[in-house]
Length: 178
Image (cartoon, rainbow, N blue to C red; front, side, top):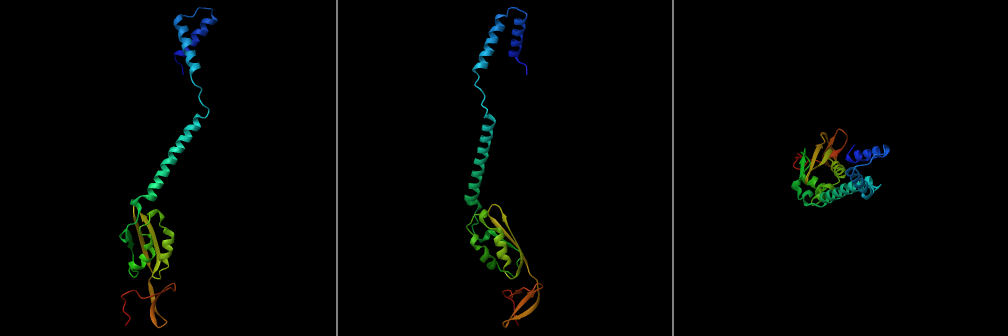
């Protein structure tokens, strides 16, 4: 990039080669440009790295702030059992589900172990599969797929259901045994 200092320097070199006098204005501008070049502080060789370190520091600070907000804010706390939505239950009662998920009330939604809750829900005899998901900011949604009984079975003098996979299920609450 050419600027006025390049022109003055090239004019001065031309005058020196031709043995001509340099004008006072060109000479004073040449001295001023040289003086600025000497006074300019040297650029640090670490300059690109300091920019990188500052950027990493800012990103890290934002990340820590968001993490602390997400884990400590009241907005992400499951306040009551009303914040636990239950879908697909016909024979499994809400009480049976709350026995599994009741410990998550007053817990931060990010600390609810979804895979563990899914496994615990699938241990309920009537539940064939379960899906547990977070609904932000403070809700948990549980979708149950219940087993389909295919026959009655007598177990220790009481009647129960059995499904196609051989899982024995107690009669649902309110079922008549006449």
